[in-house]
Image (cartoon, rainbow over all chains, first blue to last red; front, top):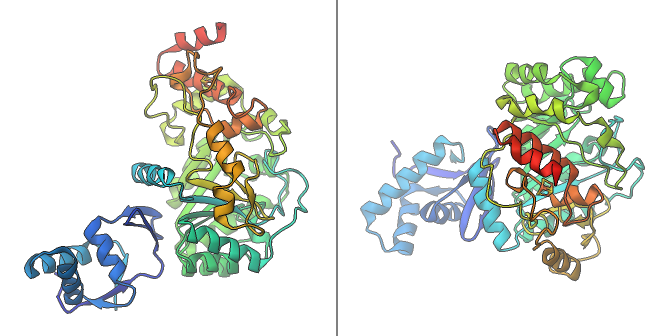
Length: 91
Length: 347
Ligand code: SF4
């Protein structure tokens, strides 16, 4: 379970680029190509420095007119999924 | 990478973003492979380290993402890993294609630390005999095996890349086992292109058509023809010069490594001047087709024609490609549509 005060950062070994507003990434251990959805792409762009999960949720609220609970849930899901794929690291 | 790779290529193609780049850092090589597509003169001018890094800056700024370093043998350049480090700092997904002979344990560890996405090593045989019949370099097998071990020990994602031709005929079984034993991804090809100076010598090494059929039929060799037959002939307007580009050691930019037509030089020009310049525009217009001789071909739906290979085979950008015709006949027969092959031979 992801804790809202967890601070995460991008895994520097992951290659990524923005194409048409979405973030594409390649993970080195398996050479897999991934594409983040709109929310994931927005959150990835916020991670130019290590950020806490609740900061990311606040940014999501400000950008996408979603309530705080939904934003927190989305951020938790995002972090859990991409931590599992080694795209993020715990800071 | 499959479907997602295709989707991103399509998006990049629509916006003319150079999504996937082959970057030849040198023509120098320590092996003498019989089928090599590079011209025999290995003294071609090379960008220096700063120029190569500046070229990467330009491609990254244009949206480039997938980057494959090749040669020659990239590791013949003492500054190769510095250039690759620069590419990683720009966020490229870096792949290396190498003969493996110069990849020491230390070099492999550095590649892993840099986050290389994949290191592909060319191996033509699980045993020295067939491999060195292709590389024509005694001792190269042992050195490539050591390189592969160093890559695997460093935890890198590794691909075994092979071409099955007359000198190593029958070696695919052992190579499939070799890759499986080591958990390597495998790519096996059976088609050989003429050299980039259009010398057809390498094509002599290709297996005859009757020997290709069992190889195409073998699902382990990824000579996949999923999606075939399609309706109608292949399209000439591939990704070359749209979402794909290639950079030569001296900075010349090609639309694709298989299509050696200069669009400009990245040392002397901006990427935009090259990519949206007159040569690139003319090429895209020309490749919008149609393919005059292919449009009535009975084998069109089975064909994996490549305009670059057709060009190298001396048939022009829009002509039929003899190697594709051969592949299409094999595929049609394997799909039980041999009559299409017979009709096409008659026509
Ligand atoms: S099989 Fe040959 S002639 Fe027919 S479409 Fe393909 S390249 Fe053209």
